[in-house]
Amino acid sequence: GAVVSQHPSWVICKSGTSVKIECRSLDFQATTMFWYRQFPKQSLMLMATSNEGSKATYEQGVEKDKFLINHASLTLSTLTVTSAHPEDSSFYICSARKIRDSTYTYEQYFGPGTRLTVT
Amino acid sequence: EDQVTQSPEALRLQEGESSSLNCSYTVSGLRGLFWYRQDPGKGPEFLFTLYSAGEEKEKERLKATLTKKESFLHITAPKPEDSATYLCAVQASGSARQLTFGSGTQLTVLP
Image 1 (cartoon, chains in turn blue, orange):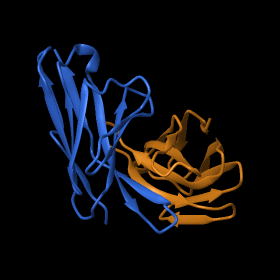
Image 2 (cartoon, chains in turn red, yellow):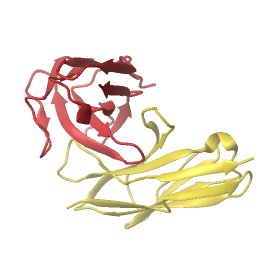
Image 3 (cartoon, helix red, strand yellow):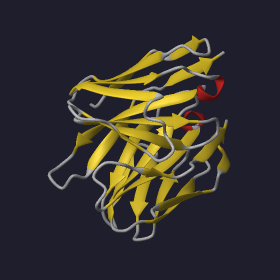
Image 4 (cartoon, one colour):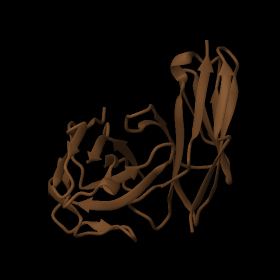
């Protein structure tokens, strides 16, 4: 199997505070993890790619100083939303890449998501 | 630019009424096409990976097929528990990391 967990599953915070979300691959090592954001009835929007031991790569339009990503080990990546505002309220989903073979075709397994509400 | 288009946006079926979901794609060389199932408030659940035209994969009532321009997810004799949003994604050659997702098909199976 390939199981990815996220913690917390939901969080409510006040505007101006920071929130940390953890993503863990439970039964495989993941050198690369991804962070997505999903709005209601919309598809997943890639925010950043997290590589173990190096800086994250952010997609265009995503503020790297606001969404801090740390890939501390082969099984853990964290997303910190700094100085959160109501517009940051969303469903955040992480995924971990499990390399299938040497051709770099891989399967991506998703966590259960974290619902962030900023009041 | 890689593009993935899924149709229909929403589909309502009676239990036992078979149908197909479509995923059309435009990529600069396809490394892999992926199907996921997503239930409300949850992360996507991996279903299939298809690598080349002509390939087919099956899992219970689901069967995924791939051509050079599109993929189909066939649902045979669906049950209410098959209700979910089905997402299609592609990985392009030269892109060793990210997937491009379609907007999904919301499937509702009525008892």
